[in-house]
Length: 586
Image (cartoon, rainbow, N blue to C red; front, side):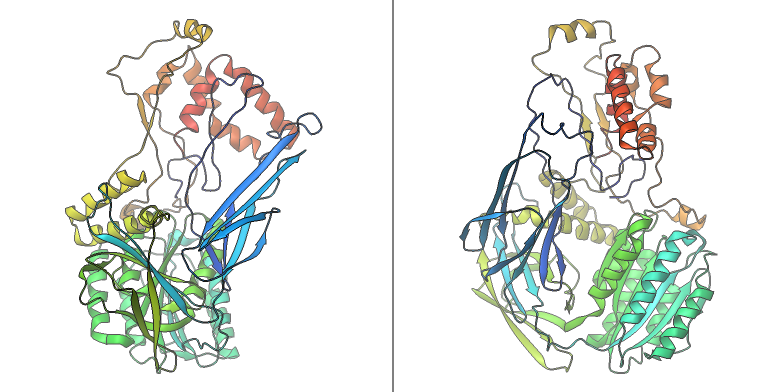
């Protein structure tokens, strides 16, 4: 999530538990979803499992119990092989595609490392499956849902398509400093990954275009070295942003792709006025090119670019979309994005036997090519009944045809609607933005409410409620505090949970704060709950300032500051401050 208007970064989560007495046990249940990582045929998940030193009870005084229970539901009928784990897990059972593991031990110190788990699906070659689940009464769509996935396998003989690549890099004034430096480093890595037989060119754009060459250059050591030197001289942040011009130039360059798979990589941190026109124009050009049309992949930096425009452009171009919302992650995410999009092993995927299925619709505009570095996952809706087996067809690098049998599996214990909700919402929002379609917006709203996920058309609020049982001492204390009437607002909106549709004004002015610079939170009516000068104290000694200070202290000093914060709680300041600065940032 971007950090605009908020305090916390995506790696940091705060939870305030009020009125905890000494010796009491605290049980917290936290639910969230995240994508599985995939690398070299292995799936992995990493769960944050570290606690600050001052949170852990002292060793030898309090013994602690550490318990990790893990259930893996792979969704495939093939064998699952455990590759590694950060904690000693014991396998408790296997039943079909489900595996269960357990770790339980008495420890002096809780784990000081994140929990990681890695496994592989046994498959030497391309394989896949179709997961199907019927719609529910609460569903936004009365059609059944499906998820089709293809795993690239670990067949070393599977050839990657030769590439004809044009890199389009935004060098406008807002890219100055760390963002452009990170992009240049990622570009150097991408160029070094090209092989003999590939072709490439680079376009740096702002108000004007600057091309590395007037045509596609064949990959060799000399041209790669020249391209890196050219980037050092021409990747200079200045000027405005014009996206359509470099896209048209790239299309022209790829009109002769030397019988290689043509690809365009667009990197930008800005938003422009003609984005809908760009999508429609590119779609028309790609349709006119046919099966050999360029694949368009997009990468968005920061929160000022329109990520739904970039997602839709990638969907139209059968490419890959990715983004980075903080400067520290740009280079790593871009390298992964390049590798995913440039290692195509099967192109022009089509699904056979769907012609007789009613209202069959994909969430994405088109089906992407299959990459050797990443599984292909396609979701959608349909009416009727699917056959027991579907056939996915495509073309290999030698242009021969391949057919992959996909068995249809009706799932009961996999919450497919929850798994697909975020992807469906993002794609539907991109469609709604492009078509300016209110019906699609209403579908997003229904999905958002059904799955408790924020969207561009809904808002999440922090609702303050009162407990049925209140401690008499606390009740006496509350008498001196101004009581809120039922008509007063008791909900605080949560900020920074959605992306927005870009900021053309900020792009035009070349503002460089689109990477989540910490801003002061807005003051809500909850300030009135503070006593006396509490609101003025919260202005100058709030959690934001406190965390900034603690991040630069050693552990001992941080403990002292936490104790000072506990003392303030007696005066009622801490509750107010935590509710204002921490409560709404998640």
